[in-house]
Image (cartoon, rainbow, N blue to C red; front, side, top):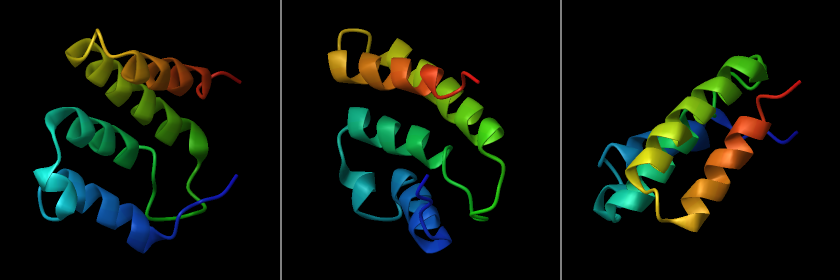
Length: 85
């Protein structure tokens, strides 16, 4: 599995908090970026299961905020499947 360099991961998280271009994104996109940032680690050798679980939990929140958005619902289902052993 490809892992993003830590600078890219931290940049994604900063953007989700309004410190970059993502801060100007619509609420749905900001929520998706914030959820994805939970899946990325500063340390590329970090264990995947806790990161996958954090992403799935974050995507569940996003899915509840945007229940009529089919793309968000698919991302949520995918996040849950990534937690399966």
